[in-house]
Length: 233
Image (tube, rainbow, N blue to C red; front, side, top):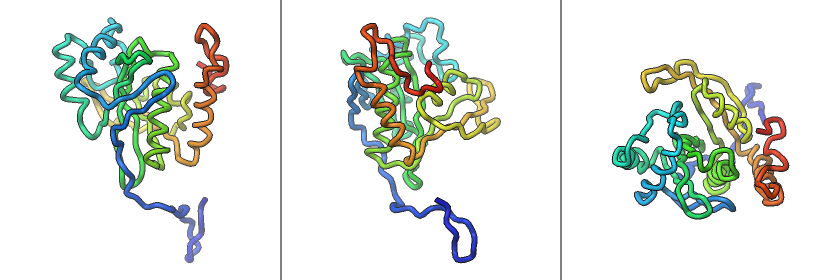
Protein backbone atom coordinates (compact mmCIF):
# COMPACT_ATOMS: atom_id res chain seq x y z
CA UNK A 1 0.00 0.00 0.00
CA UNK A 2 1.31 3.43 -0.92
CA UNK A 3 1.82 5.80 1.99
CA UNK A 4 2.25 9.57 2.23
CA UNK A 5 5.29 10.89 4.08
CA UNK A 6 5.61 14.04 6.15
CA UNK A 7 6.34 16.03 2.98
CA UNK A 8 3.13 14.94 1.29
CA UNK A 9 5.01 12.61 -1.09
CA UNK A 10 3.89 9.06 -1.96
CA UNK A 11 6.26 6.34 -0.71
CA UNK A 12 6.26 2.55 -0.72
CA UNK A 13 4.79 0.34 1.98
CA UNK A 14 6.92 -0.47 5.02
CA UNK A 15 8.73 -3.80 5.28
CA UNK A 16 8.75 -6.04 8.33
CA UNK A 17 12.06 -7.62 7.33
CA UNK A 18 14.97 -5.83 5.66
CA UNK A 19 17.16 -8.81 4.88
CA UNK A 20 19.43 -10.35 4.11
CA UNK A 21 17.37 -13.18 2.68
CA UNK A 22 18.82 -16.71 2.72
CA UNK A 23 20.19 -18.45 -0.33
CA UNK A 24 18.93 -21.81 -1.61
CA UNK A 25 20.49 -24.46 0.59
CA UNK A 26 20.39 -27.49 -1.70
CA UNK A 27 17.72 -29.39 0.21
CA UNK A 28 15.83 -31.97 -1.82
CA UNK A 29 12.39 -30.85 -2.96
CA UNK A 30 9.95 -33.76 -2.84
CA UNK A 31 6.64 -33.78 -4.66
CA UNK A 32 3.98 -36.32 -5.56
CA UNK A 33 5.23 -36.96 -9.08
CA UNK A 34 8.87 -35.88 -9.01
CA UNK A 35 11.81 -35.00 -6.80
CA UNK A 36 14.34 -32.24 -7.27
CA UNK A 37 17.88 -32.80 -6.07
CA UNK A 38 20.92 -30.54 -6.15
CA UNK A 39 22.81 -31.56 -9.27
CA UNK A 40 25.30 -34.32 -8.73
CA UNK A 41 27.81 -35.99 -11.01
CA UNK A 42 25.77 -39.20 -10.86
CA UNK A 43 22.94 -37.43 -12.74
CA UNK A 44 25.03 -36.74 -15.84
CA UNK A 45 24.53 -40.00 -17.74
CA UNK A 46 20.79 -40.13 -17.13
CA UNK A 47 20.36 -36.51 -18.18
CA UNK A 48 22.36 -37.05 -21.34
CA UNK A 49 20.18 -40.01 -22.27
CA UNK A 50 16.97 -38.08 -21.54
CA UNK A 51 18.03 -34.98 -23.47
CA UNK A 52 19.24 -37.10 -26.39
CA UNK A 53 15.63 -38.17 -27.00
CA UNK A 54 15.21 -34.75 -28.61
CA UNK A 55 17.05 -35.67 -31.80
CA UNK A 56 16.23 -32.31 -33.42
CA UNK A 57 17.89 -30.23 -30.69
CA UNK A 58 15.05 -27.71 -30.78
CA UNK A 59 14.67 -27.80 -27.00
CA UNK A 60 17.99 -25.91 -26.74
CA UNK A 61 17.23 -23.19 -29.31
CA UNK A 62 16.59 -20.51 -26.70
CA UNK A 63 19.24 -21.61 -24.19
CA UNK A 64 22.78 -20.23 -24.28
CA UNK A 65 24.36 -23.52 -25.33
CA UNK A 66 23.44 -26.86 -26.86
CA UNK A 67 25.57 -29.39 -24.97
CA UNK A 68 23.98 -32.59 -26.28
CA UNK A 69 26.52 -33.90 -28.75
CA UNK A 70 28.28 -36.90 -27.30
CA UNK A 71 28.36 -38.14 -23.74
CA UNK A 72 31.84 -36.85 -22.99
CA UNK A 73 31.05 -33.34 -24.24
CA UNK A 74 27.85 -33.28 -22.23
CA UNK A 75 29.66 -34.38 -19.09
CA UNK A 76 32.24 -31.61 -19.56
CA UNK A 77 29.45 -29.03 -19.99
CA UNK A 78 27.60 -30.43 -17.00
CA UNK A 79 30.67 -30.17 -14.78
CA UNK A 80 31.49 -26.64 -15.97
CA UNK A 81 27.95 -25.25 -15.79
CA UNK A 82 25.81 -26.98 -13.18
CA UNK A 83 27.82 -26.92 -9.95
CA UNK A 84 28.13 -23.22 -9.09
CA UNK A 85 26.31 -21.03 -6.58
CA UNK A 86 24.54 -18.87 -9.18
CA UNK A 87 23.04 -20.43 -11.23
CA UNK A 88 22.15 -22.97 -8.55
CA UNK A 89 21.06 -26.10 -10.40
CA UNK A 90 18.60 -28.82 -9.54
CA UNK A 91 18.11 -32.11 -11.36
CA UNK A 92 14.48 -33.13 -11.87
CA UNK A 93 13.90 -36.83 -11.19
CA UNK A 94 10.75 -38.75 -12.09
CA UNK A 95 8.93 -41.02 -9.64
CA UNK A 96 11.37 -43.84 -10.45
CA UNK A 97 14.37 -41.66 -9.61
CA UNK A 98 15.51 -41.21 -13.21
CA UNK A 99 16.84 -37.77 -14.26
CA UNK A 100 14.51 -36.13 -16.78
CA UNK A 101 15.44 -32.42 -16.70
CA UNK A 102 17.26 -29.48 -15.20
CA UNK A 103 16.29 -26.12 -13.72
CA UNK A 104 18.11 -23.54 -11.66
CA UNK A 105 17.78 -20.58 -9.38
CA UNK A 106 19.77 -17.59 -10.61
CA UNK A 107 20.15 -13.86 -10.09
CA UNK A 108 19.90 -14.70 -6.39
CA UNK A 109 19.53 -11.31 -4.70
CA UNK A 110 19.79 -11.74 -0.94
CA UNK A 111 19.75 -7.97 -0.33
CA UNK A 112 16.35 -7.36 -1.92
CA UNK A 113 14.76 -10.80 -1.58
CA UNK A 114 14.39 -11.72 -5.23
CA UNK A 115 15.30 -14.84 -7.17
CA UNK A 116 14.85 -16.05 -10.74
CA UNK A 117 14.07 -19.49 -12.11
CA UNK A 118 15.89 -20.31 -15.32
CA UNK A 119 17.98 -22.73 -17.35
CA UNK A 120 14.78 -24.79 -17.53
CA UNK A 121 15.72 -27.79 -19.67
CA UNK A 122 12.91 -30.32 -19.98
CA UNK A 123 13.61 -33.54 -21.81
CA UNK A 124 10.82 -35.17 -23.84
CA UNK A 125 10.25 -37.45 -20.81
CA UNK A 126 8.73 -34.59 -18.80
CA UNK A 127 7.30 -32.17 -21.34
CA UNK A 128 3.57 -31.43 -21.04
CA UNK A 129 3.29 -33.60 -17.94
CA UNK A 130 2.48 -33.33 -14.27
CA UNK A 131 6.21 -33.48 -13.61
CA UNK A 132 6.88 -30.26 -15.49
CA UNK A 133 4.19 -28.37 -13.57
CA UNK A 134 5.12 -29.82 -10.19
CA UNK A 135 8.83 -29.14 -10.64
CA UNK A 136 8.08 -25.46 -11.17
CA UNK A 137 5.74 -25.47 -8.16
CA UNK A 138 8.35 -27.06 -5.91
CA UNK A 139 10.95 -24.44 -6.81
CA UNK A 140 8.45 -21.64 -6.34
CA UNK A 141 7.38 -23.01 -2.96
CA UNK A 142 11.01 -23.27 -1.83
CA UNK A 143 11.62 -19.64 -2.83
CA UNK A 144 8.56 -18.25 -1.04
CA UNK A 145 7.87 -20.66 1.83
CA UNK A 146 11.41 -21.65 2.83
CA UNK A 147 13.49 -18.65 1.79
CA UNK A 148 10.82 -15.97 2.28
CA UNK A 149 11.58 -14.25 -1.02
CA UNK A 150 9.61 -11.13 -1.98
CA UNK A 151 9.87 -11.58 -5.74
CA UNK A 152 10.17 -14.59 -8.06
CA UNK A 153 11.24 -13.94 -11.64
CA UNK A 154 11.00 -15.64 -15.02
CA UNK A 155 12.82 -14.27 -18.05
CA UNK A 156 13.10 -15.56 -21.58
CA UNK A 157 13.87 -14.57 -25.14
CA UNK A 158 10.95 -12.42 -26.23
CA UNK A 159 10.65 -14.60 -29.36
CA UNK A 160 10.27 -17.78 -27.29
CA UNK A 161 6.49 -18.12 -27.48
CA UNK A 162 6.27 -21.45 -25.59
CA UNK A 163 8.25 -20.05 -22.63
CA UNK A 164 6.11 -16.92 -22.50
CA UNK A 165 2.96 -19.04 -22.59
CA UNK A 166 4.33 -21.28 -19.82
CA UNK A 167 5.08 -18.28 -17.61
CA UNK A 168 1.54 -16.99 -17.98
CA UNK A 169 0.05 -20.44 -17.36
CA UNK A 170 2.11 -20.79 -14.17
CA UNK A 171 0.76 -17.52 -12.79
CA UNK A 172 3.51 -15.03 -13.61
CA UNK A 173 2.67 -11.45 -14.55
CA UNK A 174 4.23 -10.04 -17.72
CA UNK A 175 6.20 -6.89 -16.92
CA UNK A 176 7.59 -5.88 -20.29
CA UNK A 177 10.45 -6.38 -22.73
CA UNK A 178 14.02 -5.23 -22.22
CA UNK A 179 15.18 -4.50 -25.76
CA UNK A 180 18.64 -5.73 -26.81
CA UNK A 181 19.11 -6.94 -23.26
CA UNK A 182 21.81 -9.47 -24.14
CA UNK A 183 23.11 -11.66 -26.95
CA UNK A 184 23.83 -15.36 -27.32
CA UNK A 185 24.73 -17.80 -30.06
CA UNK A 186 25.72 -14.85 -32.24
CA UNK A 187 22.27 -13.25 -32.15
CA UNK A 188 20.42 -10.53 -30.30
CA UNK A 189 18.04 -11.26 -27.47
CA UNK A 190 15.21 -8.99 -26.39
CA UNK A 191 14.19 -10.32 -22.97
CA UNK A 192 10.61 -10.71 -21.72
CA UNK A 193 10.30 -10.24 -17.94
CA UNK A 194 7.70 -11.92 -15.72
CA UNK A 195 7.27 -12.07 -11.94
CA UNK A 196 5.23 -13.35 -9.01
CA UNK A 197 5.24 -11.41 -5.73
CA UNK A 198 5.02 -12.81 -2.22
CA UNK A 199 1.58 -11.20 -1.81
CA UNK A 200 0.37 -13.21 -4.83
CA UNK A 201 1.88 -16.50 -3.71
CA UNK A 202 -1.00 -17.77 -1.48
CA UNK A 203 -3.38 -17.63 -4.44
CA UNK A 204 -0.90 -19.24 -6.82
CA UNK A 205 -0.04 -21.94 -4.28
CA UNK A 206 -3.69 -22.88 -3.82
CA UNK A 207 -4.10 -23.15 -7.59
CA UNK A 208 -1.09 -25.44 -7.90
CA UNK A 209 -2.22 -27.66 -5.04
CA UNK A 210 -5.72 -28.04 -6.49
CA UNK A 211 -4.40 -28.70 -9.96
CA UNK A 212 -1.79 -31.26 -8.89
CA UNK A 213 -4.19 -33.27 -6.71
CA UNK A 214 -4.50 -36.83 -8.07
CA UNK A 215 -8.28 -36.35 -8.27
CA UNK A 216 -7.73 -33.69 -10.95
CA UNK A 217 -6.49 -36.25 -13.46
CA UNK A 218 -8.50 -38.80 -15.41
CA UNK A 219 -7.46 -42.44 -15.60
CA UNK A 220 -5.53 -41.74 -18.82
CA UNK A 221 -3.58 -38.94 -17.12
CA UNK A 222 -5.31 -36.00 -18.78
CA UNK A 223 -6.12 -33.02 -16.60
CA UNK A 224 -9.72 -32.29 -15.62
CA UNK A 225 -9.30 -28.66 -14.56
CA UNK A 226 -6.45 -26.56 -15.98
CA UNK A 227 -4.01 -24.77 -13.72
CA UNK A 228 -4.96 -21.44 -15.28
CA UNK A 229 -8.45 -21.38 -16.85
CA UNK A 230 -7.46 -18.44 -19.04
CA UNK A 231 -4.54 -20.46 -20.42
CA UNK A 232 -5.73 -24.08 -20.35
CA UNK A 233 -2.97 -25.65 -22.49
